[in-house]
Length: 173
Image: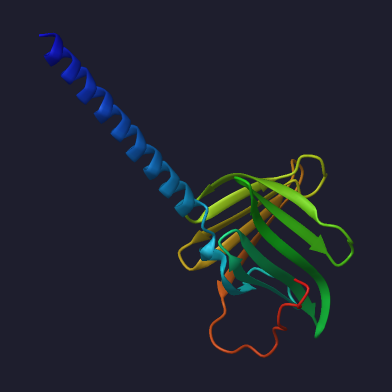
């Protein structure tokens, strides 16, 4: 009887350990899928821009822990604004770094939420924007920059084929 009881307990412990290992592996696998931002990759043109302006974003995957983007707005063939954007994983945390042409150092936003086609980053130590969101609805890439007082939405359509009026990403990006 004692041997049967020990055998049953051993089987239960073994099965419990095996289930935990499978659950942990599944969670790690899901985490890695959720943390893929490949849906950002490509050249995008803003569809809800102001009259006379054209805004673009270009995203590249550097490696599985880093994505680089470059955004800029043109008016009458002049670049009136631009920003370098980097989404980087360090340890187990993702950060979004943004540098505009007026800044020398990046502003960092911590990733607070993501799924297979969206993410939200925050930095509550600055006035605007203190939240940046990206998500994809169908074929449209959407973004929103916001604070408690102001919200700006961006709707981007993918640019296909060769586009001559989009400069390449600078080498230092």
